Length: 309
Image 1: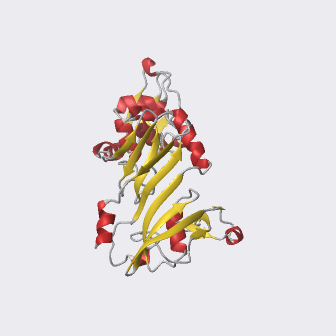
Image 2: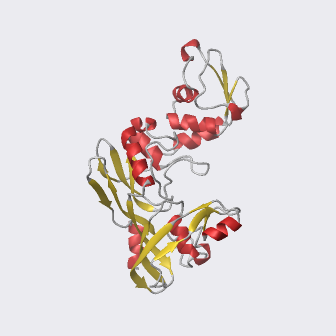
Image 3: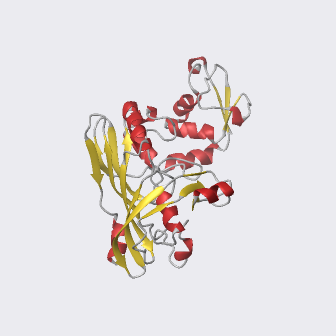
């Protein structure tokens, strides 16, 4: 356990800012240390300690298990991410597969947010959630493709609004197991979290109510692009933005995404190294000045190679 006594010159600083300075950490990492309940003040219960706590002179700040925690934070280097477009207001990236967008209980480092803060430190103050600065939408960890990040608070609020109002058009490419039926043009099923499994349920509204599952309406349009033996390449357009929406909808129809270790697990038991073949190919949205932004990115090499083979 590490103990730090605050001096008079430290009084008045936020706890996360203070720890960031003392431990030579980015502020979001210092905040993570606190939210993981590893910091106590004057032996106060760690659950009661907040990143916004104002440090006082002579406060005794204790950090438990900090060695392993800090090693995990400091030793790993944020990934490099291709930039598609950038101006003073936005950053559009091509997110690689295998990288989480923001830190959570499972992924504490090597996220898109880590990369963004490394290259654009002012992003730290943008948005509503300190763990997700500038982030207005997300892609699943194993999903690749185009993603937009706000660089100013004004643009953050605008993007939040256009996503909420469903003015954003998103196009994904998905390779699924099986011969996808020609007559399935869309799937319109509520999405809610499974009560006993780490995944989402795609379920009709009436059944969700019967099972007391908190589910929200979700609709995805599909278009068949090409059929292969045992596989189908689809264009998917989500008309709502629920977690795992495309993956859950396709799995509910019996055609999970290739390589999906959550929703298509039984299909990949003999080939665990398959990449998940879901790619955010295109994003289109309006800007406050009336112009339209549209970005398209090619398939990642692993997805492209799998199609060719």
